[in-house]
Amino acid sequence: MSQSPTPTPSASPPRRPARPQRPRPPADPVLSRLATLHPALFGPRPRPLKRGIFEDLITRHPGEFTPEALKRALGQHVRATRYLVAVAEGQDRQDLDGHEVEPMAFEHVVHAVAEVLRRRLGREGRGPAASEAARAWARACLVRGLQQAADPAEALAQARTRDPEALALLEQARAELAGQAARREALQRAFLASGQSVEAFADMYGLDPAAVREALAAAGLTPPTSPVTSPAGNSSA
Image (cartoon, rainbow, N blue to C red):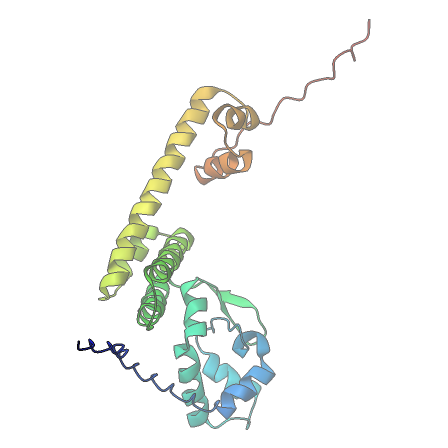
């Protein structure tokens, strides 16, 4: 009686070799020096730079940098993801002394959002949740940028991007802003028709009184102050 051959275990598929990590380029000595001189602007959490910062640095630190080396370092700095995040989040531009001197233009917010989102979505191994979180961050930046713009419609008209992700998020931000305006207008009409104080109106609809005041202020409405009632039993006979 012949014995059946013993089955041999199937060989596991060969592992893919790990992708070698790119070595980080050495830190630019000019950027290291700038971080020492102006840590609030060039440190780990950089702030958006005022336009004309190159001339300011040359004037403030004569002989410290060559113009060519400073231009190269600043170009590297403003292309870094950390810097672009600060621009995308709409932080004001600052001078060398840390003073906020210029609001961030919405078109610059759009460009920074598109680039940061492209980098985040392009990372290997990002799952759907991480990608959606990146899009939610980008959408929130665009909404905030429109809210801060003096004329949101004009800001949208001047925004230029060919990135399909950014274009889709721009449309979502526009729709969200329009929805907020519609809800604010409905709240304003309901408040005026109610004849109530802010506190009574907010309590009636389960709203935060601070949010009601903010919506009324956006329409230039000054709500009446709440009537002050005397404690019971305080009247004289």
